Length: 538
Image 1 (cartoon, helix red, strand yellow):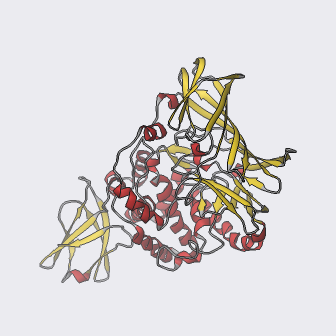
Image 2 (image 1 turned 30 degrees about the vertical axis):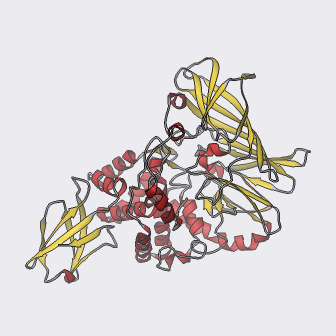
Image 3 (image 1 turned 60 degrees about the horizontal axis):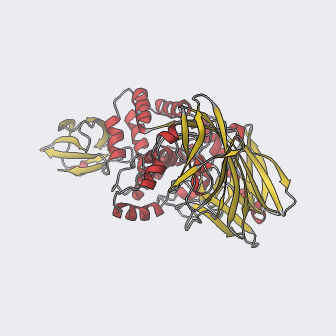
């Protein structure tokens, strides 16, 4: 999620910070043998939340398959949280803490292929977010009636901020998870997946039980505690469940009417909702929003646009609820298709930002969609690459959002065949459904489907700060052109208009002549609405 104009502000600190990484960064972002030697099968989280003390305690059962013989594994939990004990076969295990990593030692070697389980007891006051969702942490707020309203958002910061977990995107629990959260009587907890039931614990608390059947990103596992009311609906057999503050039910019924046409559009373009077994939920939160799988956090205050504004400057952004559309788009891109390392988070954010344009086109047509996506270009900085640094938990720049989307729009027009384009996007979504991939996998897929080596094109947009620059010059009336790029073998077609005639140029890094004449540069228009490029006259 962590999107929007505030991303531009974060770039200031990003650009100013030295690229010096600590042991903590490597422990969180790297793949040590103690991480790769086991494969998580399931999480079973059972905790109690005390809103007044801002305190949580409980345990996480971590079921895993042994990938390589080992006597030690790494589980992660922020160092401000207390490890109470770690139990295996009814015996407590020794462990060593190193920053946010917990290295657990077993009494004997675990054998490859075996399935094992540890119960990790913990407690503490989790980090509180200063400005969720842009910084990770818990949000302890009050609703309009003065009742507790609690949420959590940890993308980028790490799920180990609040529960013990293998905190790396390469490993999701293959068999899903259960999330059981006890909260004070009179409040409800809403988490991912299906509601299983609740139980009065006879101590002033009620436990709310949820079950996730699908693999799930660590940062997607969530809790939402409030005085909620529940609204149920369906769409083409998919359960739609909305949990909103008790006094916002009428607003929600009106605002959430947008969900059905949005899902119809996305299912047509991207395939069936990926987590059909777990259902689709919107949950009202005090912070703006987050793509929590099957429990999308919604905090747009029942307004169109982004809190009532249009970030594209086109007016089109105020025709729909940005948070509903963007965060739901993540169900396909980010939650279903996940990047192996957060350095590749453009795979989440670029495709999801493009899904906004897809929705605009479904509702308002191609021309409006092109206006919308080109309005997003005003938010691109082009100062740092969209791909980050691998192995140290470091995302790329905020350009992963809009620049990523504009790159995809460019590729659509490079292909120049909308039937093939929409088939490509659908095939991409279905081919890598519920898989964890990297940039190289994306490029290889597009290269094969488009029948061209687009590697330099992807690299220029994602691994360099600058976008391609089309240089044009007039020698008499002869119009010449070439690309100026960081990538040495950059080749990409582009369209120009001369005297109302559209010409498709097969541009390379070498000067070439067009088949048409031009009297002046004013007679030449590069179709920058279709191709996200800069233009320079020589």
